[in-house]
Image 1 (cartoon, rainbow, N blue to C red):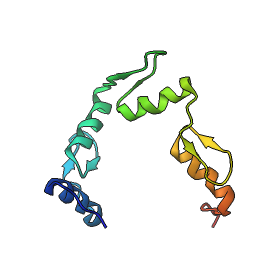
Image 2: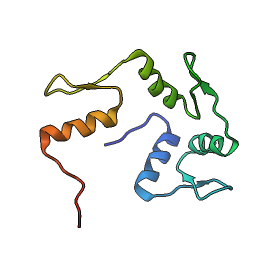
Image 3: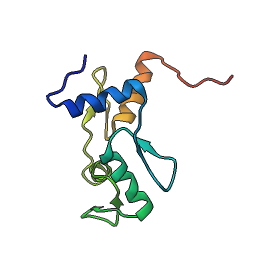
Image 4: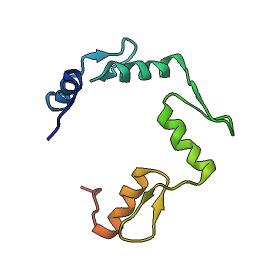
Length: 110
């Protein structure tokens, strides 16, 4: 159940159901549901990394990349397991950890 306060937000959300990606990169086969995602993607071609770490030489195309990187300096671990005392710096690490509790093994040899 998704609802939005702006019609443009709903239109963008609906593309997740239709698979429509109207914003295309003219340098590779990347396509996106939002123009802002394409704008960020274009930085990879320009080798533009405007988000710089104040503690080391790390630079990122996206602000989220810098936010994530900063946790290597601060040792912040905002993603906590609700079943044990495990915590992680990144959400994907917590997701992988949760498999130790659920027994999920999503990767199988055919």
